[in-house]
Length: 370
Image (cartoon, rainbow, N blue to C red; front, side, top):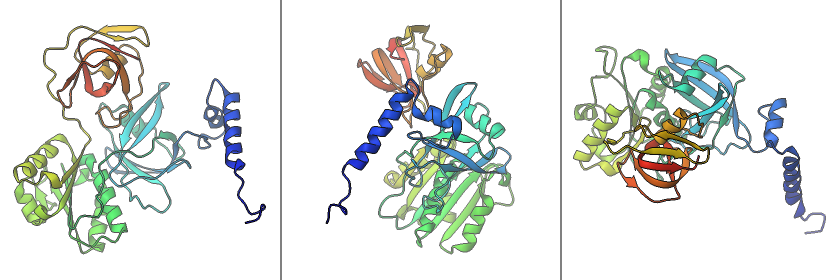
């Protein structure tokens, strides 16, 4: 290799040095804060996404197609991303699972968001989302994924808005040419509550190995099954379930019913699940004392709510995402005191330890570095 052919060892470091110089000149604001004044999608470090399409498949569901900026690294079917929007001057983030295949050719992601009555971000997006809206994004995260190698047989079970991560799994498997037995069992109140109904019916028509099953809990006609989950449903649509890997996401009742059945059947190791509504342990009567947010010189009487809710009630705005102990965005340092994890019921007295504010309550006096 001649000198002219040899790659420059300094080109990468020179670009890094120039970037560092520009960022230093932009102090006290990050360089991206200035770039967004020209074009919100032109960023150096921030990952953002532009809404390019909007579709409403049900009365309370909104599907957004989003084009991420160049920092996007892709995702695996079943994972989630954090979506951030500014509401009343404060950036609020929530977690949503892409519903598209991980192999989508244009690199865009498809998020279906159900408007929850108390959902700050979901309500905002339902009212304000438009083509051209730019939101902040995180890289994909989460452990709800398809195993390698792929299962010999696959059972996908979802309910309500829990359809999105398992639909992504279905679409990704089919893009891979998956040809083994595959049943997609979806629970909804009525047929009008099924997001992606036409898409699923098309998939069933185009793939002989795929069985799409709609189970309605408040409708007695027009579906494949009626009522709530039970073994009779599995026997009817996936009699081979004991030999399959099962992937589950849905509301608490469905999650509890499926988990209990698989535990009793000795099949818990073949059940993979993602909860989008947390199952909390009983807090009990041991929630007294004062919660101190020493980083802000703010204190409040402990009322038994999570530390995240107490901080917000005290006028603070700690970073947060899923609010259910999955994304770890709200992790902060507990300087002293005892806390209880309301997902597990476990208490912790270790000082200078990072805890998740959204699933932790104070037990007595607690000092949090916020």
